[in-house]
Amino acid sequence: MYKGNLENDLGIRTDVLNNVKKNIGIEMLVRSMTPKAIVSDEIGNIEDINAINYALCSGVKGIFTAHGSCIEKLKSNPIFNKMLELNLFEKIIFLDGNEKGKILNIVDY
Image (cartoon, rainbow, N blue to C red):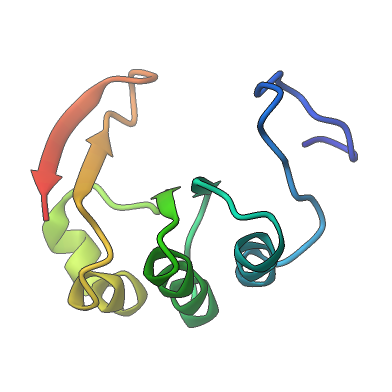
């Protein structure tokens, strides 16, 4: 979204929330829209983790992004480490910061 307008065509079965906190948006979606998957960027606080855990425990799949160049750096981040402790991930994918879309490593978790 940019200034309230969708920037990309994401398909007919895709809803985009704008101007709502991630944790509130995730919980709203699970309760009212019965999504098969939720995608969100920049997970970064305990409220986000709780909402993701709620969604996953409700049977919703998810794709979430966070910054980190390797598993060791992610583990050193208390918020992300909490997600690791809760076993919220099936896979962690590390992307190349220099080449758009290039995968550096995939960690099964």
